[in-house]
Amino acid sequence: MAVQLRSFDLLRFSGILMEADHAGYDHARRLFNGMIDRRPALIARCASPDDVVQVVNLARDRGLPLSVYGGGHGVTGSAVCAAGVVVDLRGMKSIVVDPVLRTVRAEGGVTWGELDAATEAHGLLMTGGRNPSTGIGGLTLGSGSGWLERKFGLVCDSLIKAELVTADGRQVVASHDENPDLFWALRGGGGNFGVVTAFHYRLHALGPLIMAGALFYPARTAREAARFYRDFMEAAPDEVCGAMSFTTFPQASFVPERYRGQPALVVITAYAGRPQDAPEALAPLRSFGPPLVDRVELMPYTVLQSLTAAGFPAGARYYWSADSFIGLPDEAIETLASRAMEPVSPLTSIIVIPGGGAVARIDDDATAFGQRNAPWNIHYLSGWLAADDDARNVAYTHEVSTAMKPWTTGQVYLNYIGDEGQARIDASFGPAKLARLRRIKAEWDPHNLFRHNQNIRPAAGRGGVQGDGLE
Image (tube, rainbow, N blue to C red):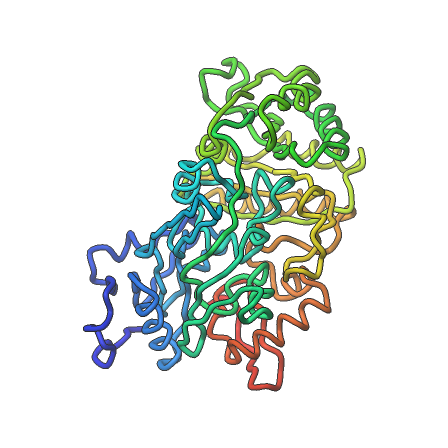
């Protein structure tokens, strides 16, 4: 489907417009998940909020599908729509840090690697994405899990203001003081309410070096180590952060040769407090077993943020799922380990994330994101390289996640899952929050223009028209 641009005012668009014959088109439509291959009619790389307004108006007035490209990391590939218009924010990269107020304003095309580097230069940081190439937009709007969430809360908990373009082409601000209902919805409700062109965050002083790194256990001790980690984290102070991952040993010189490529349990740990307190706080973790490899040391936050990046190469094929858990009894750990220790791909990881801490102390109704009291969250990340292996890897993900269902809450952190249906999305919020979100959606996007996402349908009445899901 071709977009006719004759009536689109190109003179006022300051970015780059890419149709299928543009030299940069194929590169611009690539996504982190190599399984997704969509061809939009137009990719509009915006250079300003005014550019975003024009693109939103174009898609709305022409009745075209619309998607928003920030980092392109979402496993559903929602950043690129087929035969529609892509609002490409990768031309908007401004980052302004105020070291006195400990705040930062970052535009919607910024990635976590870029933001972390800019704030770290001032001895400041916040919870951020676990992969440096992840865009700040999708992670923030989905609530934002990260290594340091037990100390500093989710990403959305550090959000103090958002600048966005709405479905009717207005530029508005959402904060506790301006459009507070919209601000509530943005913190966990995803990209359903507009295109956020800039995020304002509160930062935290930590560093310049923190004690962090990875502990590696072989398959023969993985179950015992997982049970120990569960018990340790359930009593740990907020400053002890991280997660454990059932994965494989990397092909790296620090791993004994006979273990390379073999199943492993990896504990990523970080101490978000005074460095002098870290050795004592982390000593039980580092001594248990002991681990086959101990790579915990003083490091910059940006190094911690990139520890797992090599295990998730851009362009590989990915299928993800997730669940929140009421607990991890021994039976659950055995169920998970028995399957995780027989992965079908070396690129697959199952990340077990402890709850509690700062995340759980915020009132569950304070933001659209719920399940703050879940003691554990598990993210099943299957990755592989060859299309011929699609069915086998997808089936593996389903089998493991299904086996773990007896211990789940019924809710899920939506950034972690693929396209699993409307019922799954609705259940993640619960009836009361979903009803409120649908009312806010009907106010700000009554015709569901922003639907290429984990979609919240507008409430009926008040002009709301329930739209489709992903094209």
